[in-house]
Image (cartoon, rainbow, N blue to C red):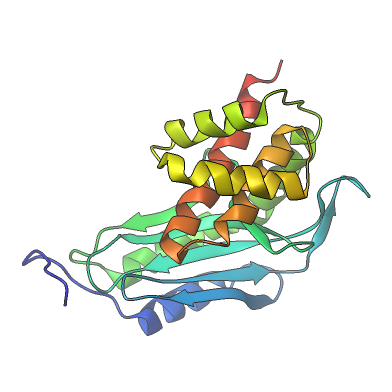
Length: 221
């Protein structure tokens, strides 16, 4: 059982689902559950919106599916979080969108106002289709950013995200399975290796991969 503060106000997973469905009504396209994970710490799921689309023709990226990743915790482990998310269909790798405004909603479990959350989320979701297309553009651009020392880059990404070095070896192993010496190849290795870990750690790695590609894009001449 969790030890939480007196002000902790849990929100049921069913309430979160209803909140997302209500907020997504104005968004064009069908919704489909792509991924769902339940642990003793969190419940997380990825909702795909619309249809998969191809990034960059027949290049390295292939088809991706944009949507929203939702994480909830009824035991005080983490805040309620909703972020723009991409899934690469070739391998089911997921990534937090490499954009500055990827976080759609983040709230601590304290005096949550469901009606206010629904309004705020609906406003963000209006911009989601355009954001997902922009994220696809970032993925496509990352395939042209060459990387010389992949292991050194991965180590730096982990340090930047304050993630433990124990992730390094699995990520390098994943890279060797699909050795693409580009920024996209680094993100691909990180998100592929992330599938081996708990949902909580997977989310951290997917967020780190997205932040890495965002920095690469911002640093481009």
